[in-house]
Length: 228
Figure 1 (cartoon, rainbow, N blue to C red):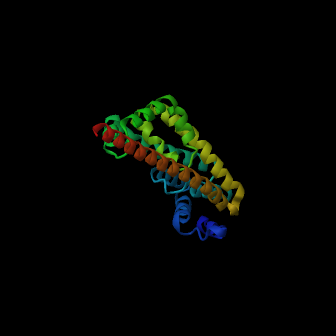
Figure 2: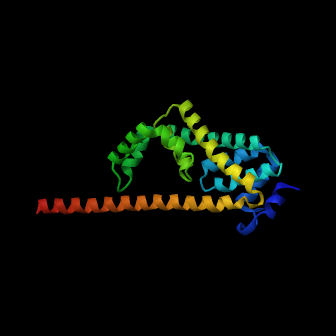
Figure 3: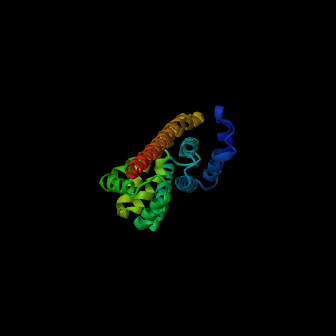
């Protein structure tokens, strides 16, 4: 029986996975095997809306059904993660520090000093940020860009990315492998975590904007009083 058919029969409450992202990933794995899973994850790194919480458990489900070896699934998905992250690292490196500062300086409600503090933080904690960031939904892809901007040594970046990706991929692939027909439960629970992370990021952005607007208003009133 084909993987797409097997996946369709295990959709549960999540609906028919023969279409959409799950169907696309299932067809890649069915057609290309391990390299197909790696390609799907590489694209997930480049386009974060593609959810690893669907692709990785589905790959584990495929391994459990014998469509792909478990070791092959872990190897190719980790390689795909590294390739996708390296592409984003290259984009950050191409943009460079000077262009990043020039772009930042044109944005409203931000200060160059904010970027300088972020840069200083990344220089101190960049290795931990890359390693742990690979295990945080949404930030898994984004963390590669500042690593490129700051020109983190490529061997260090690739090693940290490979290690962090291997841990994340192993957890989700094994979850799909062990859950079998219920692999879609991984998407449900990791999806909740992704929403929590996104909500926290949005709250942080809103708080930052509010603080900046209030600060500008206070500065404007202070200048007006001095001028009066």
